Amino acid sequence: MAFSKNPTLSHRPANPQDLLRRREALIGLLFLSPWMLGFVLLKLAPILASLAFSFTDFYMLTPEATQFVGLQNYLRALGDINAGASLGGSLGYFLFTVPVQLLAALALAAVFSSDRLRGKVALRPLFFMPSIIPAAAILFIYLGFVEPRTGWLNRLIMEPLGLPPVPGPFTGMSFTILLGLMAMWSIGPGFLIMYGAMQSIPREIIEAARVDGAGPFSRFVFISLPMISPAIFFALVINLTSAFGGTVLLDRGYLFSFSLSPMEGYINTMMFNRFELGYAAALAWIMFAVTITITLFLFRSARRWVYFPNEDDREEI
Image (tube, rainbow, N blue to C red):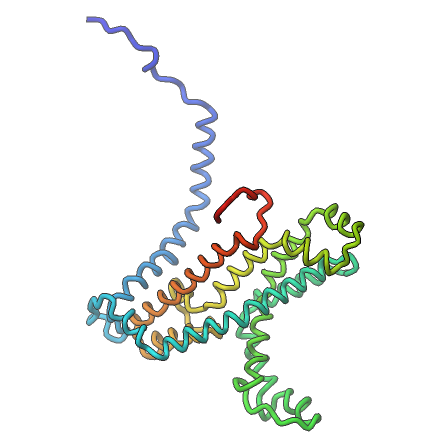
């Protein structure tokens, strides 16, 4: 019996456009594969491992005796006074450093956006360079400056002025100075982000406001700030993540990160001094949960103060 061949079921030659897209997709995946492999092995796997460890009593000196304890580590953290104090200290550190970083970066971006400033090309790298230098460098400089017996602060400033000497590097006003220096040390990325946003503001809007009689302060407050609010929001989220240093233990867990976040210091103590990896992992995940909660709150509040020029009709972020 002969069957008529249905032309609709016949094999059609592949479209050259489809073949080109598949070839480009394969090439893209090939170039992405080293990063994807590194992400899975060096990031995702340790993150998932830390989550698993947080439900165990993993003790680094006797790993063979590890047992599943469920939520015991998290319940222990809820009753740990030191953990609560460290978390509160990290929140205070965030409330101090992040506004300082944002205001300093915003002020620098405003200065560099001025047409009167000369040598911008040479000055920009100087303000960004500290952010790529380890923060431990500023610590050693600071320790040499405020050292009670040989430091420059007491010998060249306090004593000649007849003021009482600074007793130590981590006491009173000297520690506040250190916090300020650490906050200012990493403003480079935020400065460049806000500077780029200010450069993208249409010049005709600024000129129209100037013609209408708006002064520099009015133009900055009522035009520049609203139009660069997405960049401010982005810098705020990035600074939030860096301020809560305890979350880095989820995927790196190194001892010499040198964050002044008290929670990170407490996590490092639990892990590297007491070798309680299970409890340290639980503390890190608690810190991560706090960071995510604050970040979600910022995203929810952003619709009230962040200006998205292409999404005016959007009701939620």
